[in-house]
Length: 294
Image (cartoon, rainbow, N blue to C red; front, side, top):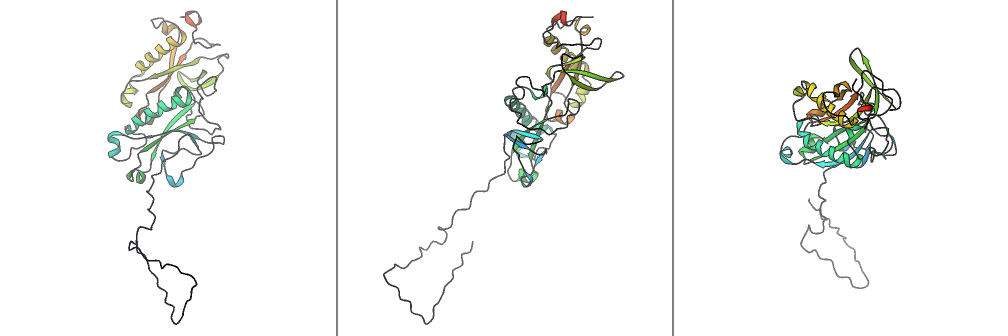
């Protein structure tokens, strides 16, 4: 930076000053009196903050948070850092396999925040990344956003108030329980949630983590997924996982979307399905008498 020196000449003027003041002399160093410029800070979004909107790419210029007591669409529960070979290339694209490690970290953190697996409730997880210019400038963070959804069939996030912290602890209405499935012919149309004391034909029994395979391979693995869910049903109901099990119950399962699958989500939601009788209680621990083979 150029420093301008200005001299003022007082022609024909005599200045008389009382007392003695030592004349200020330059020290010969024209830069040491200038404060050091601050080191530029990369933008990193906050964690434990609620968000008025959901976006897969976070722009610093439009970044906004709201108090979780107010209406919001998502809650940022964790901000992590990309590591490994992914940091040397182009920014990972939303919905790409490059986000698999990030999603695994988000799943782990969500369990700590919620007190359980988010797949077991009306919740969805979004992984947000920096803009391309921010990535090119050195940003290597990712953000884990949880949102409440309308239903298990309509996973579009809905507005809510209050933090999701501890939402999987106790008797929270977000948690999947009993349903009365609505069919069109032999095809499932949607799952209507009901109290387990009301007549129903389905009940959530748990989450099966599927082995690693491509989305196309998964589309051909229905029988394999069915068997894994049937094993969960047997454990949930307290009945033997043997040849009698298909005469006690069937299964309904909900996989991740293709985008979630490509990011590494392998959580399959499994439901006990009673196609030949209405149930009026939870089948948890019902045993062979509570869930007889017929």
